[in-house]
Length: 157
Image 1: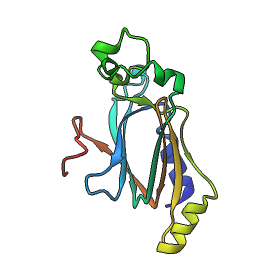
Image 2 (image 1 turned 60 degrees about the horizontal axis):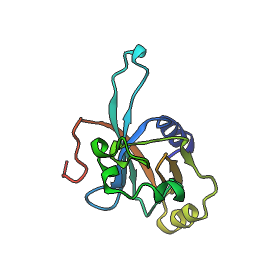
Image 3 (image 1 turned 90 degrees about the horizontal axis):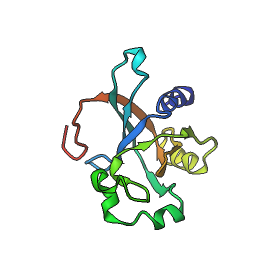
Image 4 (image 1 turned 120 degrees about the vertical axis):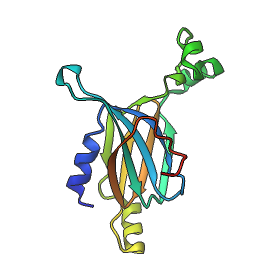
């Protein structure tokens, strides 16, 4: 995959909402489901996009929520919006994370170079930053397509 095309696809995720991420049900490719919206004045309808990071040999997920916020966010009532909305702490129950500052192609990745040499295909490393999780993915290709509302990632397509 051409780096310029990859960077363009990643730029299109900026400031949208991640509503799910994890390995696809066959456990080779990593998917990030993005709810893309636009200013209502544009008349562009919201959509769900599946970013499928193919041949994903490494996926790291780490929190971007500071420890002091975690400390006050351990209450299980915070995993449901209705019971957590009026509590102090991070309300996990909003069920989405803002892709901000967004996704970045990491240049000159040593891990990507090693995998490229080993398998004979190009590999890339991407970092996706949200207000709750940061993802680092090592993969060979990216496919993006619109998904139907109600897409369930753990059900065979």
